[in-house]
Amino acid sequence: MGHGGSAATGAQWQAPARSGYDVVIAGGAMLGSSTAWFLSQQHDFNGRVLVVERDPSYEFSATARTNSCIRQQFSTEINIRISQFGAEFVKNFREFMGGGPDVPQPILQSYGYMYLAGDPDFLSVLEECQQIQEAAGAGTRIMMPDDILAAYPFYHLDDIVAGSHNQRDEGYFDGATLFDWWRREARRAGVEYVHNEVVDVARDGGRITGIVLASGERIATGSLVNATGTRGARFAEMAGAGPLPIEPRRRYTFIFDAAEPLDRDLPLTIDPSGVHVRTDGQYYLAGCSPIGEDPAVEVDDFTIDENVWEEKAWPAIAHRIPAFERTKLMNTWVGHYDFNTLDQNAIIGPHPDVENFFFLNGFSGHGFQQSPAMGRGMAELLTHGGYRTLDLSPLGYERVMSNRPFVEKAVI
Image (tube, rainbow, N blue to C red; front, side, top):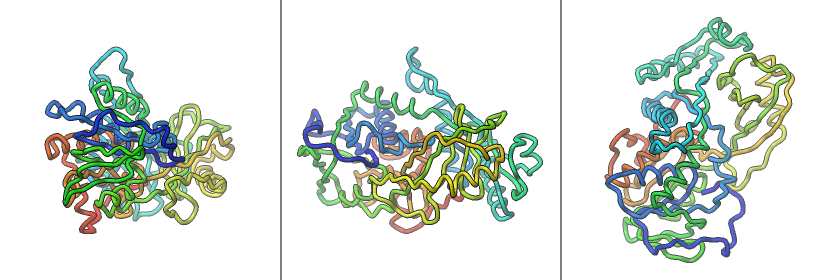
């Protein structure tokens, strides 16, 4: 589901073609559409699938407002494996989509992430993570300031003790192409998309039996997938499958031009200030959280604080890369993280007490890069009742019920 905007009037809603479906996916953005496409490719699944999307323009979705980055620099093996499959999927997209001559080849630009450590404590975290990443096959290396300057002489590093960098399948990717083709090919395979909204969920004991749409239809439902983005907690509560510890958090993106462009690609640089910046075509892209507190906001609140660029983002960027002292701001937007307050990791899989209600929530800024593995995993759950490729069970809802965070140290 979209992350905001005004709901459509009843006259604009589309009624589904049928009165019942084997799988209903609430939310048709990146994760819902990934699930729909992977489900359509499961040889052992021949059920009917309905995707319910409240805003088919996706204007306010995280999908539309993403920075479209991918990395393997995580502190847990499962998150590394999830992103490795994401990179594999992008690089072999034509093959995954059937190999037709009209299938495009999305870009995977591997200039890498550059985590900069401003103190020995964070360096020890980076070194620990590097060992985990290397064991999982990532190309991460710890670089001392002299090494960094030899490769990227434009940084100011007097206050930096080291960096962590990986140029293997890490950087930027063209996720919009994946999203477009997932929707197109899912429809071609028989998945039905409707412009509508789930406004109530019917249960019989520990099972979902159906949904009620904004247009009034009651639809019998075999399994229900919550892919509603920042509306996920509200949706889970409506289904009696909460609580879900996620909330919308504002994240700023800035596109700027530099009076003195760099002579090489700028890795996605994570400054100790929390501001990140990278090459973005002929321009540069920077991002950060709000100034000071990082509160939850309403799902439709995309208000821009004009001070964030002048007081937080630009000073950090100009300090780290002096060539960016003179910049021209080209564009600014606010997107939302569906922020998991427990541990900033995805929550995927069934609710233990509502067996046919499935979570696909709480990605906390990682949803775009994780969408191939998550859609595949969800399709396996819905088809086989368990994971067949990558075991995503550490990211299940049980940890929420028992208040056991699955700690990921590399969160931006």
